[in-house]
Image (cartoon, rainbow, N blue to C red):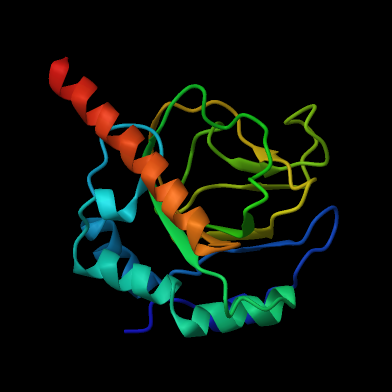
Length: 208
């Protein structure tokens, strides 16, 4: 089964102001969503976890393979007019949001493109909807707002002004984050950092 709607991705225009981005509802095809949702890792704590630190089922693993596959990379190269052939990928997952999540920021310079694939049901909450912003001063007056509905993809080029954030939300909020990054050392460093944080959280959970 082909999980990703790369035709819809190709047909979606790339917005260029104030930084390059696109939003593709239904990027994860409807017939794949149920299996991926069932096989999504059980994540009880907030924060980002490397996929090596969580355990998902077969459909989730198949999705990860597709997201990091050559067809996905080629589609992004065409859309963003960029060569990603020698750029490694890094994938992290989230299962819950905490009060401090969503603060306005830009991603680190070592990330080239950020891809977010949301895995929630129809989102009814006001909080937790990622906003792409014109400046770091306010969440109001965004250029776009993305409800984290199941199967929705948001991708943007990481630039000095690719500001984003969301209003506060506490509770379950599933998202897979894929980044193409500058080199393998970035992957090793980030995975080590996330892995250490994940283990600390487990220790605290055990102690409590």
